[in-house]
Image (cartoon, rainbow, N blue to C red; front, side, top):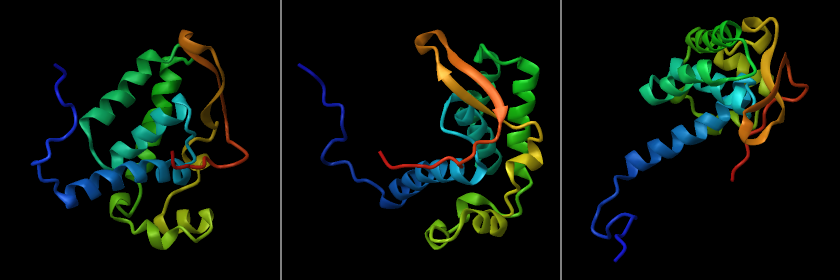
Length: 159
């Protein structure tokens, strides 16, 4: 007989804890847009480094650090420096991003939101550009990684 994998019916769900978890998940996507880091493998690692500076989490920190050693098409020193700069960029913010009321900021232009939150443009911390994945090699690893700035910022979409 198969065991039931979902929650037992008698388990009470703490609505505050559930809201907090959902909000952190949604903030991750918003931070892609605010930071300018893409939603490919390179952008995910940079966004995690940026996020760890705002919301310390050992699991996210481990994934970001591990990516330094598993990115086959990047020089480790350059990639590690890029992730450190993403982390440092998050540390320089005057506001703690998890506490921001994003519902009030969503109607505003991106540049104005970045200015209100004190988020510097990517070029301020990454003068040679951010890592952008171009193409994919399937299961063999990442595609070619180039350094530059996307012409359009990352856009988070609901699944």
